[in-house]
Amino acid sequence: MDTAEEIVTPGAAASAFKNPSMLAALQGRLDTLVGAPSEYIQSLPGEVHRRLDALKNLQDEGNVFNVQFRKEVEELEKKYLKLAIPLYKKRTDIITGAVEPTDSEVERKPDEEEEEEERLPVSKENPVKGIPEFWLTALKNMRYISELITEDDEPALAKLVDIKLSYLSSPGFQLSFVFDNNDYFTNSVLTKAYYMMESEDPSVDEVMFDRAEGCEIDWKAGKDLSVTIEVKKQRHKATNKTRTVKKAVPKETFFSFFSPPAPPTEEDEDDEEKFDEYDERIQIDYEIGEMIKDKLIPKAVDWFTGKALEYEDHDEDDYDDEFDGEDDEDDEDEEDDDHVGPSKKTIGSKSNAASGDDKAPECKQQ
Picture 1: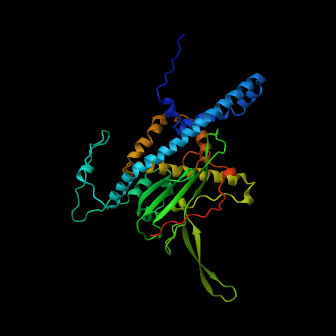
Picture 2: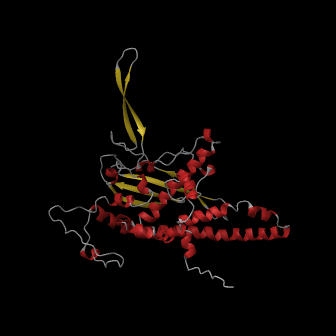
Picture 3: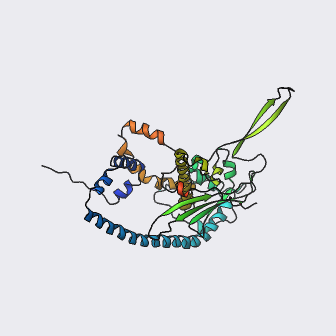
């Protein structure tokens, strides 16, 4: 009887776990096993539980090394960020037009995968300064982040000249959005800080997202992008006189990014739905911050040109066809749970939800 040999190519498993469709399918199968392992473990004799305790102690010892490894990685990230800062400074100077790159700085061999494209001639009569709308274009090319940007936001984000990364003294990082003079707000820098929380137990290899802090945006009169002004006329019943009433109604804007989701109040302590909604929102908020930190800032030019989209979607494209035959019922079930944002991961809960008492740091003024 012939037997089929299963061949797994190197790296296939790793790529599979980067594919959302495959992960969803695996998760569905795992969900059917919920409860089975615990029943099995409970049925084990005492001598086996004794050995399991030994394995747990060994794991705790190994976690101490993992904690030290993570801390050393953090120090390396800080070290190499310092080395990259001069390059980022030169990048900003070129983007803003503060400096013009030299002939040697623009010499570059064409990438093998890039087709040679025709370029417009250099304009001598009306030369363009720097690279217009560099960061706006890069942000709009990023999945999920582009969903946050409205048409009204674009003129303000067109004045964004730099996004800087810095590490906090405690575990965490800060993103600083540097703006040129604009018609919308007086701040020259808008900040968003992400604070992490370490376990007090040195054997626990886990860092939890603690809270995020944004900053106050000083909007110019009539330019607040976070609200819409509704104008209504009211008539007095007794005097029959009319008056005009203006009401500010919140609206969607990218600049809500600088106002982190507010945690549920004490009155909502028993409302699981509100805590679940809050957890989901801070998960999305944190992962967007991570995307800007780890992907956008180091490879900003690739996001501006759109090249980053090619290697960002590469793994997903390899597995698209594998799940084309899934039942439509699964798709309908997923539609109810869909949300705009990165894949979820546990980074917050009731126990570590932000208190909301921290005052937003003041942003730099122009």
